[in-house]
Amino acid sequence: MKETTLVIMAAGIGSRFGGGIKQLEPVGPAGEIIMDYSIYDALQAGFNKIIFIIRKDLEKDFKQVIGHRVEKMVSVEYAFQELDDLPEGFVKPKDRKKPWGTGQAVLSMKGMVNGPFLVINADDYYGKEGFKKIHDYMVGQMKEDSEVYDLCMGGFMLSNTLSENGGVTRGVCRVDEQGYLRNVTETYDIRRDGDGLAASDEQGRPVFVDKDSHVSMNMWGLPASFLDELERGFPKFLAGLEEGDIKSEYLLPKIIDKLVEEKRASVKVLKTPDKWFGVTYKEDKQAVVDSLRALIAQGAYPESLYRK
Image 1 (tube, rainbow, N blue to C red):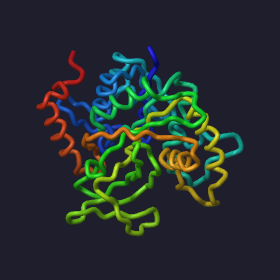
Image 2 (image 1 turned 60 degrees about the vertical axis):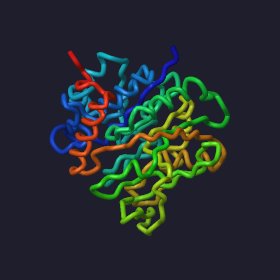
Image 3 (image 1 turned 30 degrees about the horizontal axis):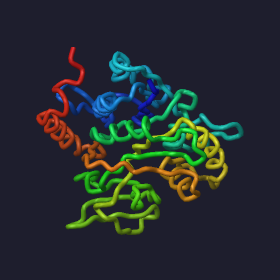
């Protein structure tokens, strides 16, 4: 059986577990958190291994909260994203508190996969279809040793990924007629504004966004060889930082966008009609609880994901 791995980026969940950590807010009727539903959907889709990317100081508590129960169902490994885990010749800036980003997070698991893998955020609910489409693409279509990286992503409709309680950041995608990504632009503070949407660019300037645009939710299907690319690119990213810059991040959407621009990667956008939800704001929790209740009533999930 081909190894297909679900990689969950959870290193940013906070310095302690308990109240206030959004990724660990119970949202299911039996106390499930959002990650539980992603894992359930991934296993149903055919994934057969899980890697959690966490921080070393969270390992004990993380395993207690979710890791140990998942280990009973599937092979589980842990990778560790740390601020001071840098290539030779680089040191963490004294005042740097912000993580190095999703590129470094995924790089932390180099050597742990023997096949294609799917990367997701810990605190996003993606729906079932994206997991199934990406798994099928990985197993049936992905060229793992191609000179041009063969990637895929879950393509969500922007209007299905908004919060009613404030602005969100999304990678807005331009997709060609064959369903391949042309570019992805990080767009900030996207919110409903009358019949349309308001948004801004990285400098805070207003920009237009179409509610029917496809967006990246950090749901990337990648070949194992892509980890070599991340390893080569991280020192270049660090070397290019301006003195005093303690906030810039090595981000998957920007890395992939650059590879597409250079024609070194092709990204199949696997469109999904599923509605995203997550606890971006404290006020979002009840909407997540209600949405999962509705899905359970429709038969999408059992009342308890971990029946004894």
